[in-house]
Image (cartoon, rainbow, N blue to C red; front, side, top):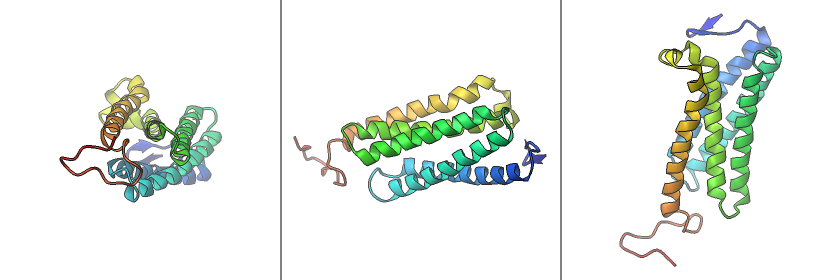
Length: 182
């Protein structure tokens, strides 16, 4: 069966239901993660979109594992990727909740890494059928999302360290021309 030009395995009604759920949750993950990343890191939009990402990722992981069980052992690698994404997201969430010294680094690595794993699963499974991507070596599907994530996470952490980390949570940055507190 082909859906939007992508080959879908004929593995029964439960598989198709799980796939539809998986795709909807995956799109939600991409939108929510992008909006969380673009939002200012304070109360409001960032944690709101982050929570939506976590819930959608839980659905992605559960549906991926279900589909992998249905098509065992052909899709076991996709279940592993989904569980890694879920584990990294849980680690990032836990780091934020614990709020111990250095939590922003663990939070960013966990959630950024989970997003990279999510995209890795998508490209590993669908890359060979996508325009442009199908011409790339298979190893690129496995490595490119993580390579991009490392660059973006490092950039975000540098920006965070330059301004927010020295301020108490929820306070505004110092006014222009004033010295930061010592």
